[in-house]
Image 1: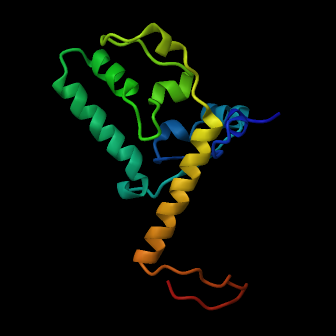
Image 2 (image 1 turned 90 degrees about the horizontal axis):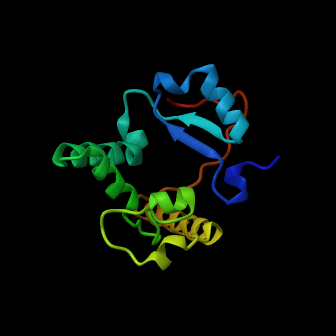
Image 3 (image 1 turned 135 degrees about the vertical axis):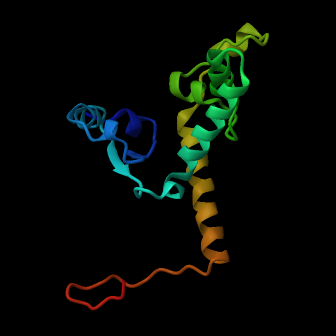
Length: 151
């Protein structure tokens, strides 16, 4: 059976911190059922999972400032990303109804996940290429068994 991620062209590896909620048998079974591979970032090194850390920081700030924390979360989930769709649209395939007026026709548009994934993949490849150029990164030859290395 093809995983949900593979059907939409999304990478099947999920990275998270080393939280205890990700080490349970229930989560391992869940990952196996949904067909994704779970990897953890380095412990005590939050920069290794920078994108998630930044999202947590943004949410905490929004909840602290808001009168209603649920409205703050709704607003965050409905804000459009660089790809032109909000996280909620990418997850459930339609726009969320917020307190802002919206044309009812806009609430039923389905995002083309294949195009979004293709665009994201191209952008990430471009970012990697630019990073490698600016930091003079290069590919190293493969290590052979028994080869001496410096750590």
